[in-house]
Image 1 (cartoon, one colour):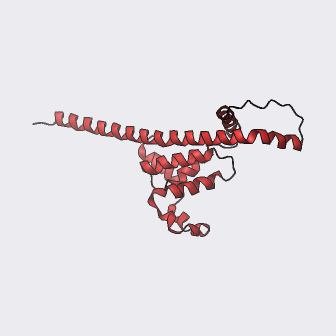
Image 2 (tube, rainbow, N blue to C red; image 1 turned 180 degrees about the vertical axis):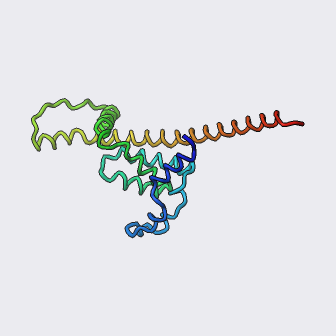
Amino acid sequence: MPKELIQKLIHKFIPDPDVIKGHKNLQFLGEKLHEPNLWHLNRRSIALAFAVGLFCAWIPSPMQMAFAASGAIYFRANIPISVALVWITNPITMPPLFYFAYEVGLWFMNQPASTEESQFSLSAVFSGLADVWQPFLAGCFIMGIISSAIGYFGIHYYWQYHINKKWAERKDRRLKAKELSPR
């Protein structure tokens, strides 16, 4: 995809920062919304946005987007990307991802999986939650840390790779132009 097309797509879906800064319900944030990294696409703000967004994606709460936006403001990361990455855990992907987090928590806490068979009742559900919540939350926390670290360092690596590739292409073009130019 050409760079211009990608930029058009990004600007089409990202809300205008001036509209968000002027929104009446966000006035309590004051000058914090005027930080340039919250809205610009640069290596630092994007890498931090991936770290914040991927960590918040593993928070088992309906407030994931608010946590991601708050984290982006606190760490001065790109807000739209942080909030968008939370949707990795959407209603379709959430059950398998959170089950995997539960399994990771069981492994980390060195606990066996609960194999109790019980009938469906409110007391059975609550007693089952008592056995599940600690490994589940531990797994979510571990997966959040791992995902955010991979996202942060992955973006830094990709960005550096892309820059080095562009510099090498530029150097090759200059050498070819120099060789073709008459002396």
